[in-house]
Image 1 (cartoon, rainbow, N blue to C red):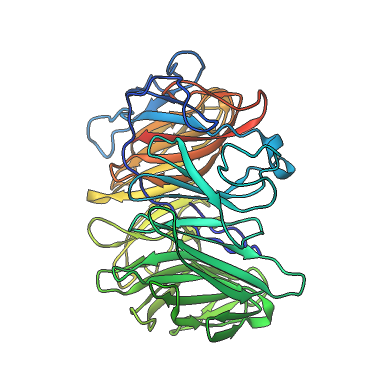
Image 2: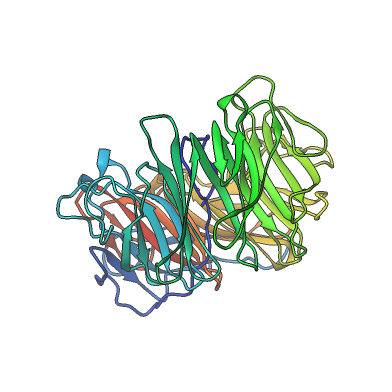
Length: 499
């Protein structure tokens, strides 16, 4: 999942994880699962730059490709393919306010896809919310490794929009969300499920608003958590009060039963929230977040020098929450992870002309960037990546990165050395590789004449991307066409794409 939205009064866990390879031999255009259509193919090759190919039988679209020298080597054409595409069969008449019903997306280590949402209003129920009665019930839906809906159930307690989900290393998952109250004190829910969908624990926290921006699991089964809270909030027996009722940053640890081990808050004079966690080999905690946006003189002290002004921040803490270092970054930061070489991988984007990780400003022309830092926070490399808007990005050995991004340009433009143009001038799905020199080493564009905005992404252990988005009518990304539940209405698709 991508970036934390501007501080809603909701509780959200944002996370994306991988899934295993699906079966690429299913018949194109076949229908299976509960109310969903699917198409799959072992291929889905690329055509020449700017051209679109016909994928599957019937329907338009497919992949177009581009290549660059990648710093002097032989050109690398689009070598990716769409393994399968599935439409979930959502008729938005069944949902409240013509809204997409899902708010959370995660992938288990076994390859199942987990979705959370609400607002099935069809009196006969909705196939994409199995075992959930119509109304305002929050639910989770489980899809198998081929994208077929295989189960789901209501989530107890949560009655507000925005429930989300994160997959656990043992095959289980966490669901979180808010329960409203007419008396000012709401209840945040954090529910841990095992791999077969049984509840392990169900924790509640009394709070006006409590958001889990990210959760990282430790080998012990404990969880490091971050996010923000507003108003008086009870973390078990530990009561915290936010500054001036605005969003206040927290960092804490829960044990395997969900009980609070510790929780830290910080001195701040403006909104602050945590949205990214990475745990080092020694157990140290790396945290990213945002500050500012509510007042004119924002400041935040994480235990070192006071950070001033609205921006993102990076910090390192010991396993027990003691401050090691912190720094301010003049750009938005996406979730953190480690490179195969053990350095810190920091993707992001900015509306500013430069980004500075401490070694001087690097021009990014209000675009995105990929940075690699050592574990003391010193920059090793900062790559400007232009207008790419990373829905997912992952480091690979040797300093390269693979990514998914929405892409729109009616005219052919240069993107890191690759000439790219959208299919029929619409928003497409761009999957590519950026080499260690910051050049596009290969790129595949997937889409057709309609818009295919990306909704969520995940990554499989085999390196494939899981991409969820919206479409209208018929969609063919290269594995054969899928069709929305109602002609002219929006639906949600999920596709598995090999880079």
